Amino acid sequence: MREAGLSASAVRTEIAAALSEDIPWTRVLNSICTEPHPLAVELSHAASHTNLGDVRIFRGTKRIERKAVALLLELLGHPQGAGSLVSGGTEANLLAMLAARQEARAAGRLTGRPEVIVGSTVHFSFDKIFSALGVTAVRVPVDDGLRLAPDSVAAAANENTIAAVATAGSSELGVVDPVDDIATALARHGVWLHVDAATGGFIIPFARELGRRLPQFDFHVDGVRSITIDPHKYGLANVPAGAILFRDQEAYQADSFFLDTPAHTTLLGTRPGSAAVATYAVLEHLGREGFVEITRTNFENTEYLTTQLTEAGYGLLIEPDLNIVVARVPHAAEVSRRLDADGWIVSTSKRFDEGLRLVVARHVTRDVIDAFMPALVKADHE
Ligand code: 0PR
Image 1 (tube, rainbow, N blue to C red):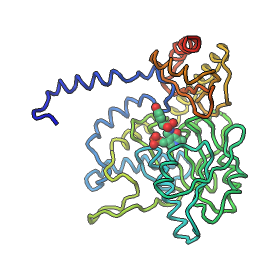
Image 2: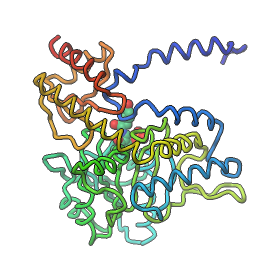
Image 3: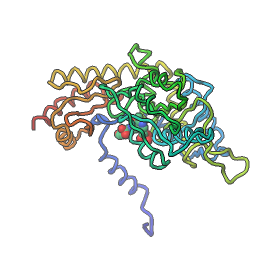
Image 4: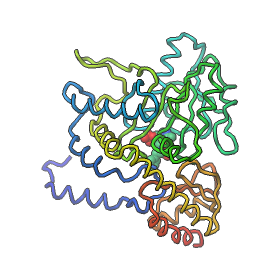
């Protein structure tokens, strides 16, 4: 550390220079995070000093977290449920797995190492979680559309199964597992069904309202015990804002040293109240109508991009459920690198050699698509 500190303006200058190296949103087509809503930015700034790890001090902020959780539970069809705002999808998925393991242990039915049933499309956050918890991942087949096959999930269940995970919107490919059919297939096994809707949670309810054919994925489905949903993705809150919701109670994680302090149900102790404020602000300000309109625009722009790609001779590798397009582009990794050199960020899935993955988040407007298409064609023909 320096002996004598720098002036504020010198520090500001350095940070401004670093931020200016970041890629502007108008050139980002790989990210399911987007520019946060201005109200989220403004109010999270106002709450930047808050810490939900100490709810004796930050009691007003805690009340806002409870209100945000209540709105999310209502959105997902179960106002009587429980939950917390957390740092993102990884922490939310971890807490769900901890709760499922806790329940299986309490029931005394485990005879060996705990197992969780997943498909090959499950998010890689589960690899971290399984290794941290000492859980074996039982990977079962996905169908031709890369969706988890309900019968194979049911066939894999045994006394050591603590949970099965369905993904309601994979960030890799934008496909939604048939959560309702998986729940039906699992019903007689009594297995905890966790739905990872980190990506799709703020899309599917509104897309269904717009008449799109997507499965019911939330607490309306009997057997769904926990859901991950991320305000910092399509919920337009700033990072870090995730949420874990439970049909019943939350899992107890730890007691504090201090009297009159509630037990912790989250992994993080000190945690940002600003995230709760940002989440609540966007939910209240946009309301259902606001989210439906944003979802409508995202799907319209996805269709616009698909048409532009087709006209330029690029087919789709899979039929997307959500606003993620995987175009067939030979040598996709090389094209992605050339685009990167030209200031455009796209991604390629390791699953396909010829798949260029494009995410149509809120900042990907028609203008952005119109600017992107010639850049893609140029990178492809270089
Ligand atoms: N589950 C699903 C279905 C996800 O899509 C993600 C993140 C997670 C869990 C983990 O959530 P956190 O990253 O909040 O812990 N999906 C994106 C991905 O890895 C995250 C992302 C977002 C990556 C923006 C890049 C980016 O620019 O694909």
